[in-house]
Length: 123
Image (cartoon, rainbow, N blue to C red; front, side):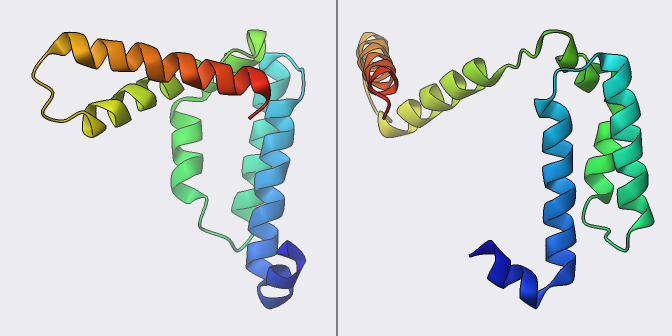
């Protein structure tokens, strides 16, 4: 399916390839120093291309390079915490108007337990 889109837009194909290259860097087990080098090479490739859709992202990447490359020390992310925070926010929207905070926390426990059960089932 993606290939049919690439036949319509060469820039889309190029942007997709750049995004996959960057993902490949983050998927590799390398040191932060090597990661900085590889990211710099990636940034050079992207800026040498005609694409400008990565410009703001590259600026952010450069502004927070030290913090971002710290990921390569142990490959830990805050993904679990971000996912949990998102579930809490969704629950708060769904439970708008609940009169007792205890009910909200009970619902959070039930929903979170259900989410963990689904994950353990492979769903």
